[in-house]
Length: 391
Image 1 (cartoon, rainbow, N blue to C red):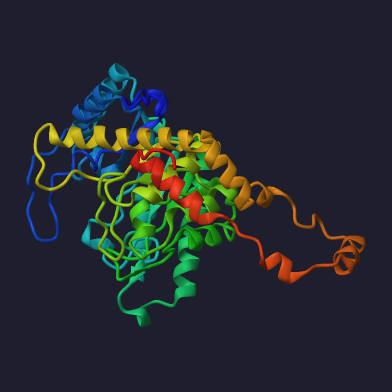
Image 2: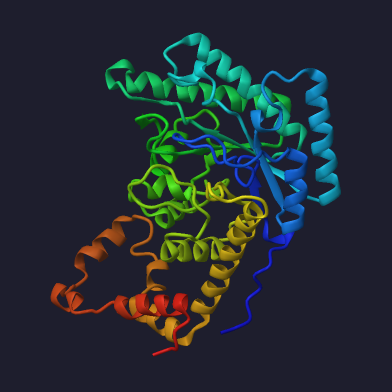
């Protein structure tokens, strides 16, 4: 086994949100189990563990109700920590889910006043993110959904959602901010059913927008996994469509509530395929961890969680490189026809090409006789993950 670099450096482009490592351990059934981490101290901690970036909701950075003087103090301390550590702001977003006014949604609330307030809050959040250099603004519609399906006509809700995203794109263009949007899909929780529940839904929605080039997706491991979808396959489609603007890494058990476990702590095989895909696809965006330490952690344990998240990613990236360089894997991929899939089947349509295809002899029985050697290929993957000797 080749030497593996497992200590992160800023060039790895790892980032964490203020709500992740600093999560206070509150859940639906229990009060906080640890103290909060001030934004400036959070940034200094990221610098110590080798992370490159930090992200935030507007309310994470500037607590609601802060005076102008208090907001300026927090911002000054935050900027000072960024300057001292070299950590940069890699993403910003707006909290449109905590305050009770958003209980029926934000951009899709039945109350027009709530919708207008949500847009104004998002615009102010965009200003804050732009002032700190955030290149991506994430739109997570955590409250954009229903429990009572009869209360909202889906077509109307989606029209209001599109109207909001179109308006915000116009705002960013008008201000000249070098910023793109990323929609974060989630099937449920906190709403019973959420609009734009999966990567596929979000990608289809983006095609209807006035400025689709400005909008991509920010998929999260837990959100696709909780309903049993393959995150690796979803990311593949987002990459294929050029829409992977940001990514949230964590982990999750299928069928559970949104657990936000440490990346790599559950679905190791799926995560291996995900990391291999990201590392070989040309993706250059932030590798952002949207997860939180176990609720029973304390003290340095929250930073151990951060170090472990990055260490696992680096280990999987190294394993993926070793896997692809293994002659046995190269042979198994060739036998499986993996390279042949990259070849065109017929090319662009022409009458001549259609006639030639119809005239081409084919023997379905001969085609059916092929083995794709997938059992050996999959076992080689497991062997690499477990560090087994090559058979």
